[in-house]
Image 1 (cartoon, rainbow, N blue to C red):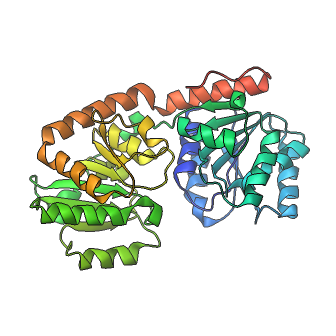
Image 2 (cartoon, rainbow, N blue to C red):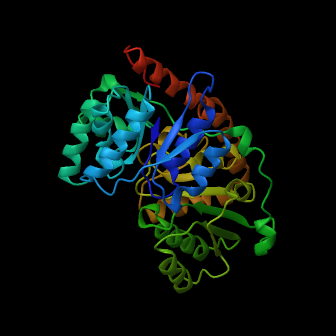
Image 3 (spheres, one colour):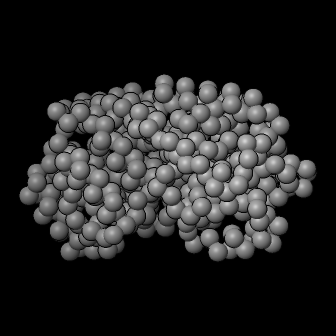
Length: 377
């Protein structure tokens, strides 16, 4: 049984879908507990098409006693052999307190996945998280970089943590066809096209990228364009800033897209200038499409991108370093293509959803047999 109470479909829910779809169904029969709102409707529908049961559960906050009682009733009714709680960050899954409800419902084999362990939250949330971890048999971390936060802040013993990197379904991504977004926007083959994909929120670093591309154009690199894919609270102000910087005709807002992989095939380089990330799936997707990536040197990102081999790493919030990295890509397209090809090889070798699922299955086996955790990846 899986639990996720995220209100919308994001990277952590993408992880859950990829994991579940790659499980050995002859050994595991998954079902998923989610909120009943519209934000995860598509997620639930896709799970249904895979023959996976989804159950609605509502928890309005960490002190929602009736919500916990409802969760406990569901667990007692279904009697799952194991509960896997998806934890995008400290604020989600009610600071992990669903583990207590599950334990009281006599489910003692509990696993969590930590995505953004660096989000510490309030002191009350930190205490709740530490308490909830007492009932957890194993913690899957998507990145090595989470280990310090998990052991120091959440007080999880290292012996209970297993690092299993995110993975993507390469065969499925390879089915994508070009979106022809270049021709639609009137960009010719000589234009070097950068892209940033993600919610339009402050931590994604869009403003640093707008300043960097402005500096790039001022320096004489006029044959460049930037595609901004996604929606969010900063959309209006980012569009206004583009106009103020004179970037009309250079920067294009594409909104929310369902064909991200098709867009990837039409760009030259992905940029991820975020100030906080775990291990973004968008980086893995770009690398599958043989595209180089420029990204912030933070948390789990350097575990995917090999500096100078599959992409370029820069300090977060550093406009000058970002501009230099962009200029390097534009000046040496052969190097850009070489990095892209190396990136695809790296994903195929280390970051497939099948590899991720086999690792998680080993954790399940260890928890159910009460054995030691498998070695850290």
